[in-house]
View 1 (cartoon, rainbow, N blue to C red):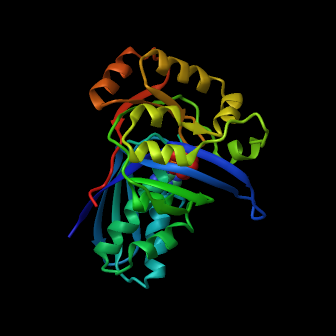
View 2 (cartoon, rainbow, N blue to C red):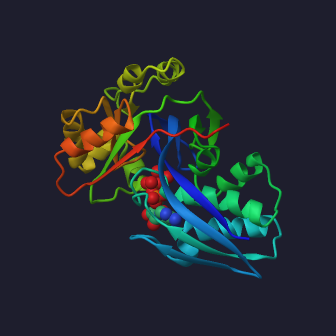
View 3 (cartoon, rainbow, N blue to C red):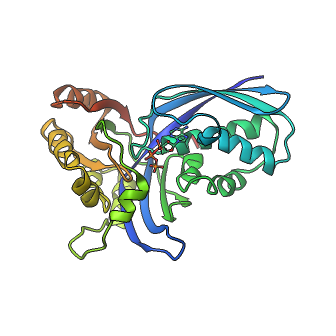
Length: 286
Ligand code: ATP
């Protein structure tokens, strides 16, 4: 029996860089949020081995792909003899700060755990997933969450109110490693108020959520790629309530009260060579 799965992208509502750790990673704290934009995956059982086919640009093939690596990891951890043939349709912009690869890996772990009858709990899958990428535990959980450590320790938060989201992805990628390496902790950088953000979420206050959007990686990413600051200005001009760069960029998003307004903002947006997508905040049914 084959299984179909949707792999949801995420945005960061806050991102604080706390400091560099001895293992080379940065200690972070961030409020993360799933959005409706997704990749589509289909899994079918085979007698042995993993095969991956995909539709989409800029993706590594075979063993470099996070889908393949997640499948192999679960297979060896669970001592599974069966294999899987996997097909991925990519819609989430790649290397864009939207955790597309992590979302695909999380969807793969969840689907194959079911298809192979491996019997791992969500907590087991999260532990396994963090070996492949810091955002994978969040992608397994979904919804609204507070993450810390290198991003792999996640705690569910009350659901963020449903709002429209306009995603603007410029034509250049930004390497997560390069952005973090270029980050300098200086007193002038605005720090996010996570508690204030969580309060605004609990109280369903869209405007207060927008006034608490802060990403400490944004100044360094904008220095590397000044187009990021220009996109923020254009999104505000087009009528977004609040704007922020997601993760380590370069995607910038604008929040609106609902999806219809997001379409209107996207129509007004002065687009040059950027990709503009309309989506919305998404919370899973618990
Ligand atoms: P994050 O926000 O988690 O740092 P990102 O959104 O910036 O991630 P991804 O789209 O997850 O970036 O891609 C990061 C890198 O992972 C890409 O450079 C790509 O080569 C590699 N990768 C491997 N598998 C996948 C996949 N299935 N989808 C997207 N990227 C993949």
